[in-house]
Length: 207
Image (tube, one colour):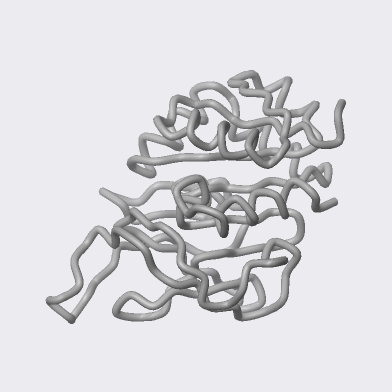
């Protein structure tokens, strides 16, 4: 398999084509699949997503993709979750009831509860990411870079060492997370112009 091949998990998310095109723009060969066997053969995985947490996890489970992702990660295959795909990485979400996630990163997902009435939910539009620690995903992406967000829920990692960047929206929340070879980006890199494409390029080049 080409070293720049990524396997993108297709469980029916509406943003998968834009994510695919963004990766292709930085030189990736993208395999789209809903086949657990292809996930198990992958050398690098991407899990995009938009919509509701519970419905998305149900779609993954229906296809057996949740188990395949867990087995691939246990076999040291890198994984990048994007937007809702990042939220899937966590243990649970309280979106419209309690729902179990993939459990690859300790922590949970919860809704913005904002005191400032000037701030609306969903958090939508351009905002800055602030570096918390150095990481290969951030190569050539300066602290303070603007990226494009659309989300009502945010991730709360159990361990601070998993937090790579934060963003301010009423309170600081985690906008990039990483634990071992499992990484997550809360914003939409495919809508974040050159900074977003650089993040995807960095993931493509990481070992």
